[in-house]
Structure formats: C-alpha cells, structure tokens
Length: 87
Ligand SMILES: [Cu+2]
View (cartoon, rainbow, N blue to C red):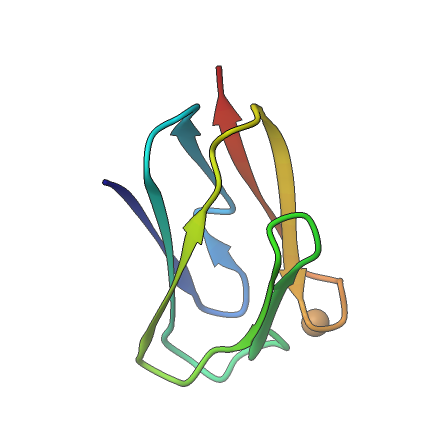
C-alpha cells in the first residue's frame, strides 16, 4: 500500500502527490491549523467531499486504475492540489 500524507496548513503541503498505476494507494490529509479556508476537501474526480477535523488524519483510498492527473480542492474550489497516477 502506497501512502502519501498531505499537511493542510492554509494550503496543501505538498500540493501534488504521485502514485503508480495499479498500486493500492491511500491519500491522507492532516489539517494542522485554522488558517485559510481548507476545512473541507473535495474532489469530484476522486469521489470525495469531507470535513477535515483539526489535527486528525482523514484518509481516502485512491483508485489507480487509470493514469492521469486528478484535482482536489478546498470547499470553495480555491485552494487546489493534484493527485497524479503514473503509468
Ligand atoms: Cu476555500
């Protein structure tokens, strides 16, 4: 299982993570401050919309069947990041 963790501190650190096609993948968000407007993370492409409680890890299973670049964003679609599935 490949696991990537994004620290949420007003933005996404890092704002891009990569997985390999076909590999079981887990994406974890951990929000560590109240800065900015990133209390909700959402992705239509990846199929999630979720509140991020302060100082808790929230994880999503990522479907790596299809290579490509998949965006995620804050609840207002202002702060953005990407998940890249590499072939
Ligand atoms: Cu926002």
